Length: 229
Ligand SMILES: [Zn+2]
Image (cartoon, rainbow, N blue to C red):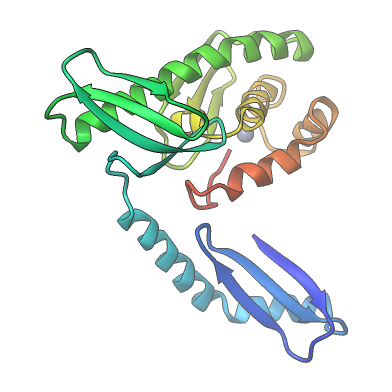
């Protein structure tokens, strides 16, 4: 994805920004669209190298689930506070900015991660059924089954014949309207399997602001932009 801005400048400027590797081009006012396109294409190899670098940095800063780390829930950023105790693990909000993660004394990174991910899963499992009911009524479709799992390349998926929907666990971290957008997107696949004009027309009709939400979803600090839907 490339953002082009027109400016009163002499030469074209091209930059790649972290964390998603978004490409921004500042182009002279008089430069033709075709010339801008060719300039971007001629630097594709460099763009790809920059994006790979950001992706590498992101992987290095892998989560450790320790006190002080930032974690997201429903689009809000929280400071994680790990509490070791000898009772069942749980997650609780201390206040608007702090998320307490209660784990067994001696828990390692993998165990702390498991507790938090299980909690995310539970939150999604509670949030999704009301959304599905709401949109079943609007779209006139019926979802047979909806599951949550970790996915590397997709926010969601839909098997039209089985009427089964999968949602990415990462959605628990995103604003609720992003979750709803993916639910609607996958449910619209029950009306139209492919990402064609008909699909887009349905989205425009039922959720006119979907493009805005999609860009919000892809702007977050969590993942790069190569998500497919
Ligand atoms: Zn899709």
